Length: 71
Image (tube, rainbow, N blue to C red):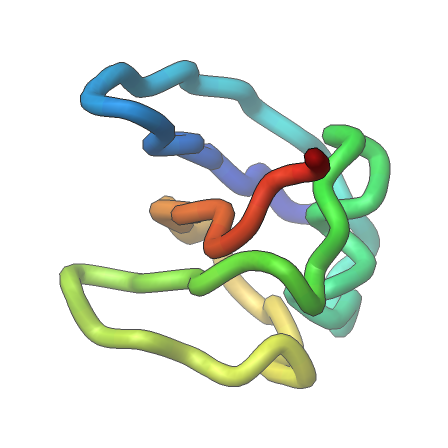
């Protein structure tokens, strides 16, 4: 199990959450329990965009920017 810190940035504000996921989980799998639609988000690590299919193998801090909202 690994710890994942998630900062969700939306409309000039941010919310931080912490998850514990099994090692090898995909980024997209880590976003779903937070109520986020992975395909509607940009995910960054240290300011660099990463694919949703990236496997999480070590503790990490993800910055998540939702790229669309419901209407």
